[in-house]
Length: 357
Image 1 (spheres, helix red, strand yellow):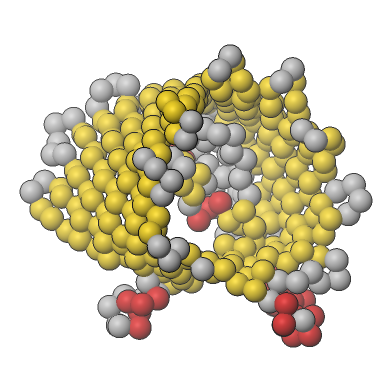
Image 2 (cartoon, rainbow, N blue to C red; image 1 turned 45 degrees about the vertical axis):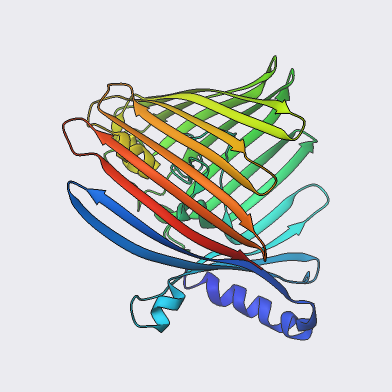
């Protein structure tokens, strides 16, 4: 967080918290995972562990306070094998006024709509394939105005590289959400920070998303228009379908399939690792993605995510097995197979445990 914002928030929090420290609670997760990678006849392995901690603080003068952070490799740092790193995910104040909510500080800003890939998010690549990246958390000021139970207006001012008074370091966003004949419709506009944006790509975008039910299935779609005064405009199109059914009373199987087209494949550079892996370097990028989730019993499940570039050059498959063990411990075993035309297949296997407290 920016040098100006940190002292302000810390000073604002310390005095009242010191008085109400007895009301402080904490929760989080510690996970440790071993990954093995086979690539071109070579093998490499890596151990990664992380501690996620969230503090549940009492209200301060009617303000909701939230602080959450992650420390990567804390144990390996103590053993002298790796250097630990700290990342603040949340450090904000939120006040709920009569007609609007105001949030200031490090906070998650994301506009998902149920898709596997989200090419029209506030920050491209913030969420993908049911996972989030650090770019989802940003120093921001957000004003949210609820209009009724299924509609509202969000206005965001953020600083991707940390708080600054320089207007070139500021990013702006506006999102409206409304219900239309049983469908959820959103319209949004984003203007990237001039100081940190790639000058070869459009710095502004306008988009809409739509989701709802069609018969027994859920459908969703998005369209994004990326434009700028200095570079050529481009577009993205996404269409998806999700479906769930119950083979028996206790089991719910979920399926999802979606198509994505980026008219300028350079957008894949910004949209996240999943896009870049599938980008073969052509002018246009077309992806077909799908997911499958099957609960084996009350404690374990199997899921599968797959992606393919429709030019036939690249594909990826990722199976995941999860099991909840006694003592709030989750066991996860996952694999990934990455296929590239005229190249060796890349395979990875990850196994680990996480403890929730």
